[in-house]
Length: 255
Image (cartoon, rainbow, N blue to C red; front, side):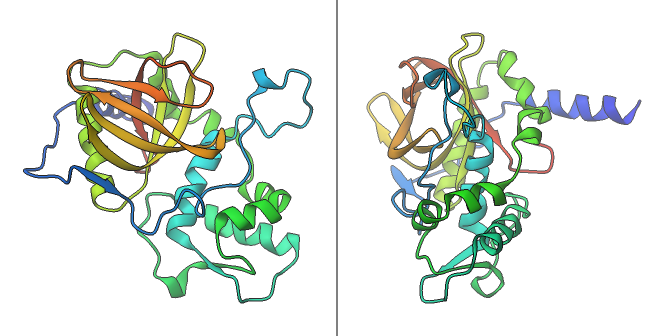
């Protein structure tokens, strides 16, 4: 069997696996410690082309880059507001150093993290040095052609979405951000990514609190309907409330 065929087989197997991992007990609500929507997210948005038909030089189709980078800054960067500021070129270099770490790598200890001098948070840094941050984050190309994006076009077996929920809740309860691929394909409205950073039990099931790269103003929400065993875009930017499919993203070299 060729190497390509082996990789394809592993991808299909991973996509279709749906044996849930259900811990004996889990908190009714949890959020990632030391993560703040107001401080630890980007001040600028990923632009939506449909909302800017006459726009030029839009920062559009960078949602995967931004979502991945929020996790990378959370794991690999340290902000030092007391340190002297540097020029834009140096800030871009430091952003490249942060984004050079794979998002599934273990957290770096504070002494080994990339230092961002002159700012107290990612929000303040990206507001003041937007151009340098965007330069440092680099191209969107490989995120757009990533091999796991094909999942948006495929149905999911019974139990798959419940298993995804179990994995997400376990990660959040362990204090780890979770990047999610969300889609309502073949409806051409939502093929997007968000970052879950908390959850709470609600009457209908479980509500995930998410940061949406398209909306720096307020948190979003994705609901898991336990009765129907499906996710619902209950508060996803520029998306009608309705059923969606959800997959985890960038949690290993393969998926």
